[in-house]
Image (cartoon, rainbow, N blue to C red; front, side, top):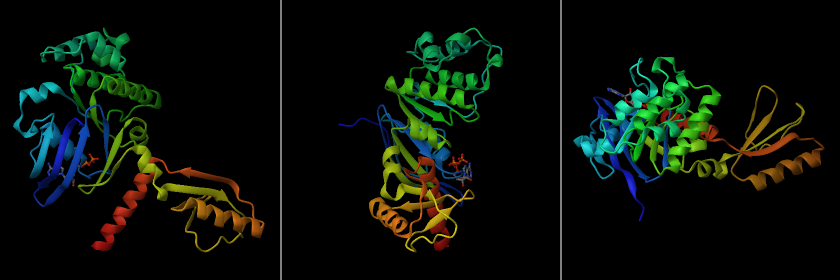
Length: 305
Ligand code: ATP
């Protein structure tokens, strides 16, 4: 039997006239890293804050570790860790003092050395918070969220503003947490981050979940394959293709039937003696799938209004 940590059915949230969340279902299992993605205003923060117990819902069923988060029970708070986008930590405390202070709030905290190890701040244990770099401060935010040894961790945009090296470091940290069996609900605007870290991804738009799957399934759907090449300007491709040409002259065809379309294309090129320079076939990245979904969704809304 799967062990659900988060169960949501028919969740709605209304702010006056605005329907921010429109009846979503979610099921996140123990040990999963689950990423919630979506453009600005999609309803991610509202959803996550309802799960954290920081907002009330308008309708629907929500269970987090078997509890209703709206009831604000201490037992649930002790088993979850929340890392918000900004945490105001005391600048004159050291890293170890800060973590210890938070460990003191919990009945069974994680040992200090383990916290430092997981977040990669062993070398900074005696450093004052105000002397940490931005990336190190963000790790300390995560360390604070981990102090109580939570089963479930909410990570809100954990790497925003990081340089590429710091992001890789944070990814290692998240993988460490996953290896420890933590369940993680991650919100991020970085699609590569979700692709790299998440076991499953849900894409929210306008209060609804429009796609939900493993990152590899999302990008492997047939419609998500792209054929790219260059041809001389005067060459006329067979009319059946819908193409896009970028400013460098590279042609792209998005295909739902790779074998057939590649055959048509290469047969045409051979017959016409046209060379398909730099020919590549590739799966779209999660970012490209996301943008494709966003465009489709915007088009649908325009047509229905
Ligand atoms: P972002 O990526 O920008 O953080 P989001 O996906 O987290 O966006 P939400 O913050 O959940 O989106 O907002 C969803 C919708 O609800 C938006 O239209 C927003 O304007 C509206 N909204 C959010 N909070 C409130 C509030 N307290 N009162 C009224 N409307 C709100």
